Length: 554
Image 1 (cartoon, helix red, strand yellow):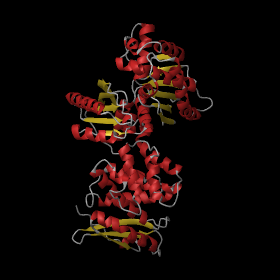
Image 2 (cartoon, one colour; image 1 turned 45 degrees about the horizontal axis):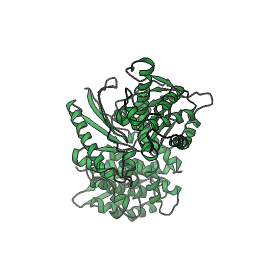
Image 3 (spheres, rainbow, N blue to C red; image 1 turned 180 degrees about the horizontal axis):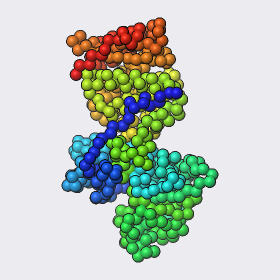
Image 4 (cartoon, rainbow, N blue to C red; image 1 turned 180 degrees about the vertical axis):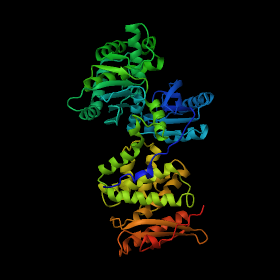
């Protein structure tokens, strides 16, 4: 049986917390910037919301060439600065921020995030559509008990709509589609009130865009299962507020659990479509900016419900921001209950991707084990990388050969592309870029600034991460050159006075001279030697007893 995850070697770090912690999560959405500040109680573990903030910045209001507008960037940075001040006033220990479709799709999106870093010293993680869906699912699970019954979850944002199928365990289906309330309103709505022609076009367009993700979701249902639908996001919450005021004369608090039918939705949509922006803005519970985009948002919801065969929807007020909180708690070892399965989402996602591209897992697992062994034995001696970089090295090692799925020729370049675009879950866009680059440089040329994929890494430190970890991966690949597990063990010895780095190798089979592995090490060592400024010397020992103990000097 293949040890796919190299046992405990890549387990996520566990942080022991005895005291409560204040954490702020910021979501840079296409329509609005949101922040939630929570108090984490590690002994339960759970969190309670102590503050919410929102500003309608409209990152999705972009130039004709798709760039974020300078005035929008200025507003966004001012809002983020205000969020930081509020978080600090509430004694927040940590601020976690994520950006979604508007920043993801803008040519100057990464420049914007670098400007945020430079001006505010705030790191914002860019996440993929599928990763956004996964974290929305975590947020919903933190608020509602699904009782192992299949639920569809729809989150209508400004730039995209996420559809999720889950039953309180691992999500069965995650998708993100480029239909959002701001995107549709800016691209297709020119009349006010909206004309019949534009209204009908939007309905048909949205239906066409949602058909495939809905089919994929429904395909994951068992024949005897009936889908229940949950809705999150500002569009759906505003719909619920309008409905509750009309039917109940008041708005329930909390709104989570409130239900409305497809018939109710159609009645409200048919009413709102006949009103102008200004007239919609006078409706209690409707903001000026929401009034401009709510018709498009409700069309998305109507078409999704019809395609899913859902006659009602239940509101959930928690979504991406709360999911960011839950994900942080998971990665810091604070959740061990019904969300426990999510703790290893990265590892399982990597393995699934490896299987998708027909990677020989037994071989890649050996390479990963060698890479982590080299990493551990050289930590604090040749490098000072930590747990996060160790995890990235493992993922790169498992997937380094996936490019063979496309072609043997230049397969390292194909590996970069497949990893970068493979929608691995649990990783930020920057982390995906690092994994793909480390795998890309497991052979042939060393990293060079003339390579776009290397030059475009966000910082000098990220480039150094790739250079140093890919050098370790090259050696790990050489150690299993025949892909038969010829080397049983590797021990490292660093001799600083001579700038020598010795590898003492134990063969798996007595009498095997491991000539091809030794040749491969000699062939690949130049990049390692240049990166770490050492001379690499590999020696084959007949048995473990003959191996000199490692001398690791700090």
